[in-house]
Amino acid sequence: MSGALTRFRFMAYVVGVGLLLLVLAMIAKYAGDSAGMMQVVGPIHGFLYAVYLVITVDLALKARWSIKGTVLVLLAGTIPFVSFYAERKVVESVRAEKSL
Image (cartoon, rainbow, N blue to C red):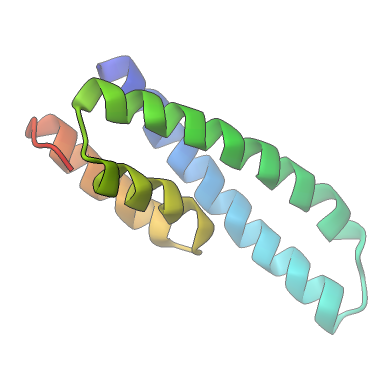
């Protein structure tokens, strides 16, 4: 399970940073009338979020999380800064062998 947790931690950080970049790209697009950054960051974040979903479900199955806990962690990648918080809670939970 440590491999699944390591993969999850990595992807939680990557998706969190990617989401922050996406927010900056959206600000540049709508406030600065510059869509170039959005055209690059948007698809990359979308792909990385899909990878995050798969890795999170893998960890959820191995750690035997509830459906509610799994869905909440999956949604954490859609709100800026929440994936960082969720990553800490997931690590604490998995290391304590608790179910979400």
